[in-house]
Length: 88
Image 1 (cartoon, rainbow, N blue to C red):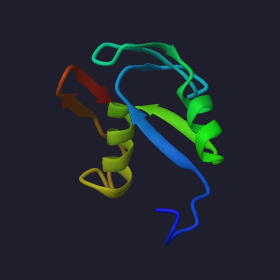
Image 2: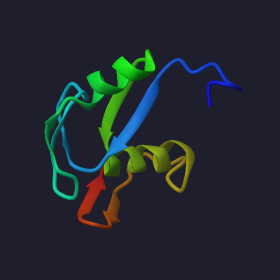
Image 3: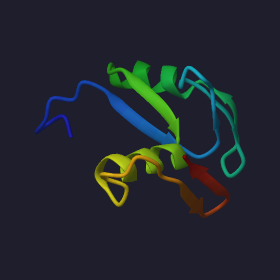
Image 4: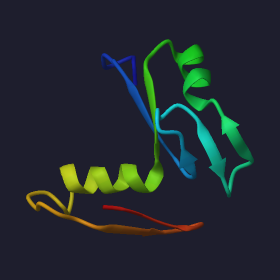
């Protein structure tokens, strides 16, 4: 991506419980991650600021901002895959 674009930050949507500061995957049921310092690991390799977010929250924000939820004040999204998640 960097070959054709200026990348100023990276967002990663990860399944599981994410710390409040959006740096650590506290627990992921379908990946063997427990207190995984994902932001630090990625920033160390990529030399770019990284934010980690729960995958259902990221999907909900994406739909609200750019997809089916555009133009509404309130939205609820339910995700079903390897688990059940959602965003409000």
